Length: 466
Ligand code: NAD
Ligand code: SIN
Image (tube, rainbow, N blue to C red; front, side):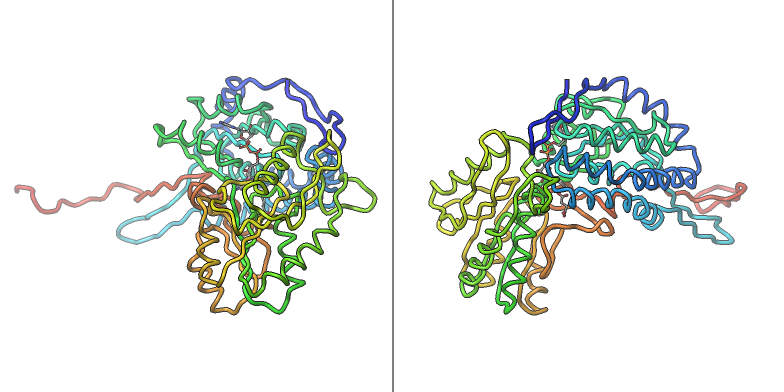
């Protein structure tokens, strides 16, 4: 039995039985041939209808996401908008990246490149964007002609069920896209199932690595892993201290820090340290943390559950006990609810900073002597998802861009808020070089090269006797 609870109140949102993996995969396999054989125009039209169904139910959908994740109502609406926008972006990306190309030559016939779907794909989703991120795999997978078994996070099943119901309401056959409610056990069983052709995963590095390991001896299966980060935001000389502070706050604390692209490490050159830290602290003091539907809308809701809140509080205290200096203490006003105030801690003097993703509103600050040291510190991680440089001149950004080891490298913009119209992925422990968003088209279909003639025409070359 899977039960999801509203983080802000502890009330039950949804309950249901875990799904049957064999049945779901068998159903998807049966549905595949007919779906792949549909003209592309039909698949695109059904996805466009799906976008319209979501548009009509946008308020109810946003309300559900806000209840189930705890994110503020305004922010849940932006997630629904992203779900809708994904359809047109994916149609464009399919045509641009995996469309058909033909080269005609009068003598040698035609050389063609076309793409085929893989077959049955498992999509595993995280809780922080329970609709937008799995949707970012599902929509391109369906357009390309795959069928999908989608397992939402066990923490946000209701959102997954709602998303797939919208697809069915739009006329996409039930066997073509199914929701399989469950936890890691169902996820593991899906990954291990002989009859899936690939796994499109968004979640933690821990689970992603386990999936990679499981499928290592099966190179025929497509595996796209979108994982976490320990993302640096670097500040060098800038007169725009207030703007820099806003960008830092947005990077670190949007969605209560529960974004894979959230800034976890604020690296500041010595000459800017005092001004930036003071401005960031002042703004952090003004952040409203409240339940998603509060009349004065908060900037941050709670984190996803009590266990996560406890872990983050413990992490803050562990950093303190190892020599960190609190700039702003993380606090937990209710023992039985996962609301946290944003925590900011200077960890410059720690002998070893743990290179792990602390998935919540916890920002470490590191003082460095100069820009070169800042770049070295930014790259001092096994992850490589997102990074941002604040301040400097174009030549500084060029240098930063060239040195930064990440899939997203921004300048004077937040580390988060990635665009669906660009590739979205990272290196190191952040991904396996199969970026999602605009480039999702690439892993949803494989290219087939053909040379073709309407009738056989051949001539013998050298090496034949008379
Ligand atoms: P998670 O790894 O715990 O779970 C993700 C999904 O995988 C869930 O559906 C879960 O049930 C399933 N799962 C867990 N262990 C599994 C296993 N061994 N085999 C198969 N399936 C398994 O992640 P989460 O806590 O739900 O989400 C937060 C994480 O997601 C953070 O690390 C965050 O950085 C990451 N994330 C990454 C991106 C990205 O695009 N790079 C986007 C959003 C979130
Ligand atoms: C995320 O996918 O967790 C964040 C996306 C973003 O805001 O960049």
